Figure 1 (cartoon, one colour):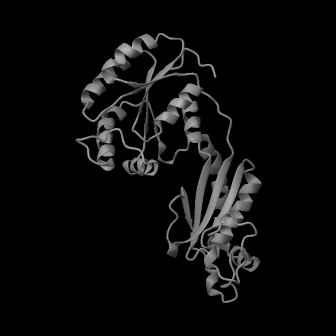
Figure 2: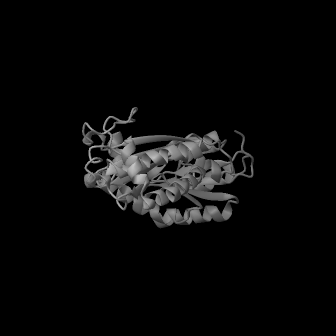
Figure 3: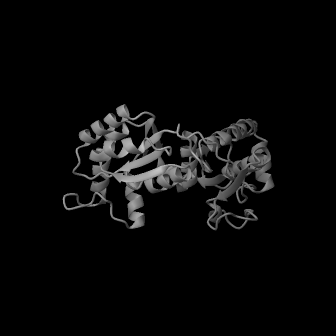
Length: 309
């Protein structure tokens, strides 16, 4: 993909583990010349000649724990003053996310050396060095919940490119509050304000997949009124999430046990979204399904083995 000379040059600042390699690859795909690991003291001498190239440049800095943060900030400020059309792009994630990523990869953090003992101290030291640089940012992305595809969308928008919409997946997960909240949901909705079918002895053994439970819930004026507003709101939100570069959204719907109200409402929301949001792939998971018991109807095609209710 060709990039014209009017595109800005970028300093890409990122904490280790926040996706800098992926971001450099994305910039390269958009036609940028990538220069990795520039010594902060050589920024000016390196970038001024490169800035005259017809190809825009993105570069990263080689940082180490013994560097003076104030000196690096001064060098960045000087380059920003002297180089026209120069922007700073930062990538970061919370310290606990960076630690988890390094633990999962088994790699050693570059800041771990004789004076810095352990991964946590290395991450904290880099964060401290990175913070004053981050304040100079023109653009910033928190990569803690950003996939590689979403990162490409976001960088593309900064560069002025329209990227074809990717398939958008909505994961609807039902759960019981008494078993704990799902950890991966962006949105959580509580259905415990509705009259509980559990207290009807005929309905108690059934689940929200069974028609008698659905009839009971949607005969409630407050349930029907809520669903009409809720489903319209979610349908309105989805394209806005897509515009932000997201490719999936997890919505958790809970009630006390995850068997009746949450299941009924999530299934109804799934049907609504499939009818009104044709560009979305909707997947429903019932987390507490194995707790429902033999009388309850099970999904004909459950998306996971350990479902819910």
